[in-house]
Image (cartoon, rainbow, N blue to C red; front, side, top):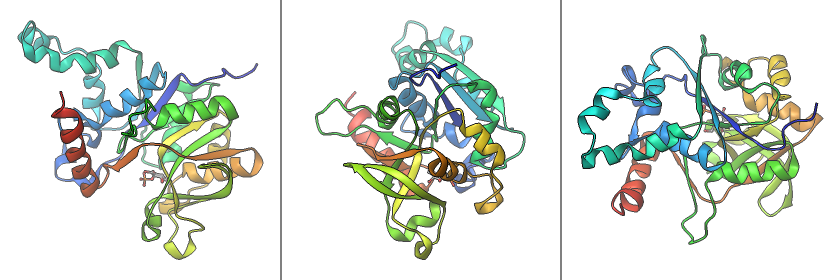
Length: 285
Ligand code: G1P
């Protein structure tokens, strides 16, 4: 049976603790932290929706029920504000909710990003799929073009190459220990045929400064690779290690996507994103 030609499903691994944002994340998921008035997970779902995704799978954990509630009706609240201007504040999230299906699965143990993705196999089945890490917040380029956000760019490349695709950006060499780092041959401007990948290398061990950011398109073969992948950096099953094997045996393409990415898993990146959205989106409304 041949694979569907394009990507209609997306996994959102959202089981992490968000310890960098304690105490805020003590009793709420880090993905519900708002950039101005919209939670990170909504930006992620909107980016997937823009890319044509209609099935959104959330790999959640204990203490993350607020995410499932967020993609559901809240009749009491809606009744209270019905007909008032305030009801318009729900337009965007209602639009997301109407655009697809939302599926929630629990990752019982925190064994790493690779393990979270493998947990989502029953949602995905035998199809290519997207993965979005909501704490990497991506915006479209502000160059007057109608270039979409990163995920739509990745899916377009998937449609062309029909192989695993990762988004990359250059980071300061001193930061390589926070990322998966790739090396490879540039086959078109900004597009690389990946030959090697390493998860969170020290700067002196990093082959390049090209870091994977939280956007992937994966073929379903990745699940077999993940089953074979032993725990790596931090004792966790790393998607980077599974993809490195795919790069050796099949093909992985890395792309310097157009647009900007904010590291909302860190406080400086979160503040930067807040200022950006306040300036460019909120005030402009
Ligand atoms: C994960 C991946 C890493 C990637 C990063 C992007 O790391 O393991 O390869 O570069 O996301 O944000 P984490 O940030 O979950 O430690």
